[in-house]
Amino acid sequence: MLKSVNRVVLALAGLVLLVVGGAVLATGLGWSAPSWWPWDGRHDVLLSTADRLRWRDEGWWWPAVIAALAVVVLLALWWLLAQLRRSRLSEVLVDSGDGDGARLRGRALEGVLASEAEALPGVDRAHVSLTGRRTAPEARIGLLLEAHAQPAAALAELTGEALEHARASAGLAALPAEVRLRAVKHRAQRVS
Image 1 (spheres, one colour):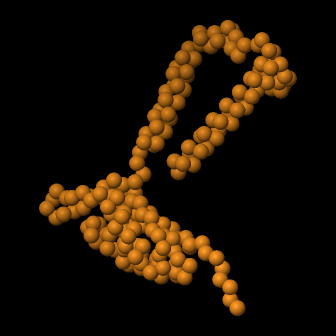
Image 2: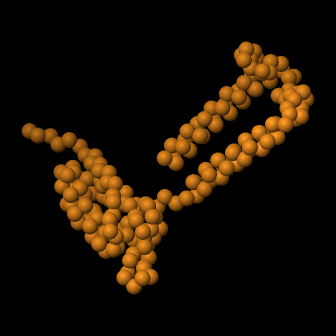
Image 3: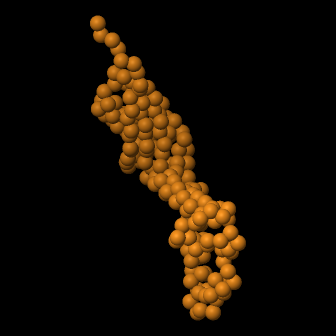
């Protein structure tokens, strides 16, 4: 979702800047501006003295400006923190039975799960990433299936073997997974 929000915000900001900048440039070069454009002369200023001082004496002006700027700052901070947040899980908390627990590196579990998935018949390559919380991880698995592979059988073996082994070895109650299957691109074979 964050990627789509980034793209929409950047597209809207770029569009607004392009339209406003192009209109200001066209007006500055002396071209005719549309009827809705507030500045029509080459020597016209963006904010006149009267425009800058118009709302200064109103009681609602400064609280409204401060509130709008505070909202902009909060949205910018939220966006910055969302960019810095990790989407991958760095470690998984394993219940060792002694009350302290142990930490298992997320990359190690991803690597083992990927290598076990690649060893399954019909699987050419596998990519695994762990998301979620340390105590309740979730797996996102991408499988590249060979041309002769049956997707239902590959999925059944993945959930029955690889995911079950990972869940049991990490001592997790459950390991939900989202699996995406793709087929290897290959040429058609001629039959004569």
